[in-house]
Image (tube, rainbow, N blue to C red):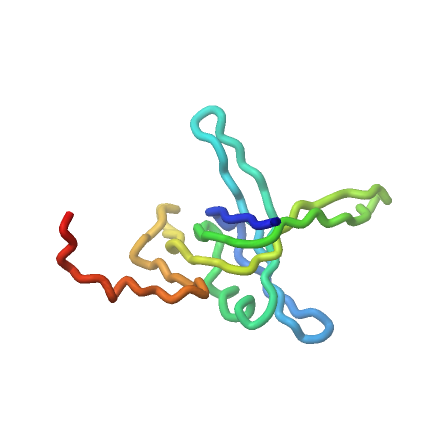
Length: 133
């Protein structure tokens, strides 16, 4: 099983492009942080989402945006300009959840702007407001 579930921050706006057959592809550059304090490490990933969802979501995916992602890790092999073979760690995205929008003036998240785009229905309105705890 090859599944990556993570919360990442976008390092630049999503780039929408189209394949030769017209399929939309949104490319995301993402920062994934692990650890904390002096031992914090940031890994940089590239993610690709295909189809109508890529076309619909790309205008909302801006630099600084925090998103939850689900996808499959791939290690793409390519030839660099100098002729050497290199590898790039990429994620084929199957689901994205917007966790808030980046506040341009302060760089902080605004939780009130969160939008959920998961394929699972949000049933939060079904709960009674009188929770016993």
